[in-house]
Amino acid sequence: HFRRDEFQEAVECLNENLRVLRKLGSDDVEMSQSVLILGNSYQELGEFDTAKHHLSEALRMMIAIHGPNHLDVALALFRLGICLCETNHYEESLDKFQECLRIRIMLLGNRDVECANTYE
Image 1: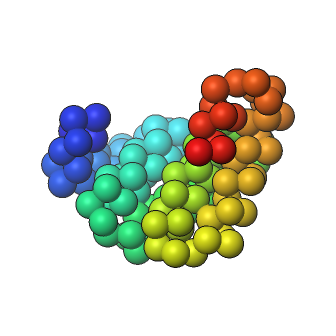
Image 2: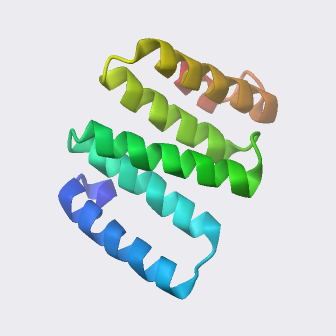
């Protein structure tokens, strides 16, 4: 649903998905990615406080899983930075974008398209 811009449906499906994953004791990687997409979906719906909560949770989970220097962590930082920017928390947003860029440059080199996208 998320890729089809059906964000309310995505929220419903992702919440159910997380409920099942928690019940089954699924791996943390799958759960962290679902939490990230859930945060993205809430952000697209304009529910920024809820989005920030889920994006921050996904970031914490990804750091715990991968360590601080991983592309999944960079993506979570990027998405959280967008959410913070949309809610006028510019300084905190800039910090997230800078950390995202640092990770992407370290892992991909400064000529990679993901690094260029971070500058947008």
